[in-house]
Amino acid sequence: MDRRVFVKSGGLALVTLGLSPAFLRRTAFGMSMPAAPRGKTLVVLFQRGAADALNVVVPHGDPAYYAMRPSIAVPRPGAGIGTSAIDIDGYFGFHPALAPLKPFHDRGLLATIHAVGSPSATRSHFDAQDFMESGTPDDKNTPDGWLNRYLATRGTCEACRVGDAPSPFRAVALAPQSPRILEGPAPSVAMNSLDEFSVRATGTDAQRLEALYRTGSADLVHGTGSEMFEAVKMLKAANIQKYQPEALADYPRSQFGTRLKQIAQLIKMDLGVEIAFADVGGWDTHVNQGGATGQLAGRLDDFAKSLAALVIDLGDRMGDVTIVTMSEFGRTAHENGNGGTDHGHAGSMFVLGGDVVGGRVHGHWPGLAPEQLNEGRDLALTTDFRAVFSEVAARHLGAGQLDRIFPGYGGREADWLGVIRRA
Image (tube, rainbow, N blue to C red):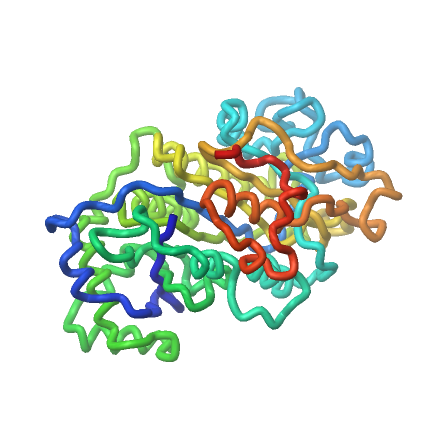
């Protein structure tokens, strides 16, 4: 349960921490070394900008919801296909744009968590994202991200190897720069796209390294850069441009859809990927948010179709994959004067995979009556996000030393929701 190398900055920049070019050369595709055995993989997806949990997972059974949102509430189930909430348990429903995810809920593969988030009271996007990725709410001095700490505490398992050596693709971020959640001493790779990673590899080694430095990230590149070039050779040998998803996996032609397709590609190439990360913005809906249709609906449409395509594309590999979605905080319970919502507190998460106890909404619902709201304006928090992350890390990835991964919290199994089945 280990796999990562890590590229940083404006499309590229590899942190080359002791990787052996000789290893990369001899384990390139088509060579004699065997592919890595399958292990567990965690895919983390960050909805940056604070997604409105109350319109994502609609509490249509709570009358206060409709009283507080006269123009942006999602209608109760039954108002029409595509124009009303999709009922999932008689009380909650998915936004209609999440229809592609409903079959996974019905099959018990998708768990929904409501009223979850950071105990920090901050309403700053930057701070809240930092706390969620560092795993240490209200502590701005944490130097690394919680996923990097997980990597650092785990020995290299057999599934994280290609041949005799650790896979350079153990941890991969499809992002323009290394995410906070993976910052730290454990090696990982971040790249804007697989295509860009390969295209930038044209020319001589010196020309490629010069091009990398021109991104303005020379301080993020360590060593000679030869490890990066060897990693490129591995991808080029795999003919990444000719990748064909499974027939029913219809990825949107969006940046997010493309990144999830490439995550599926990396996993299916048996490179020993244990952690994969991607993010998607556009969730800060202060103005003209919309209800069943509109701005938020458009974001959710891309999100749900991309996520559904990833699951379909991975097929039976989902038995070893867990996908976790998160956003830094929720939004106000009341709509504002601009047809939108402002920065709030608790939000929602999805956990999807073969190990997941799905088909239900996990957590304690605090209610939306005035006296039940946080500070009289937000959905109150009842589940600390670290409870979800701890459970996923321990039960899916087999992590120990949770007190090191989440310092100051320590795992606290008593707070876990039972989202992941016991081994």
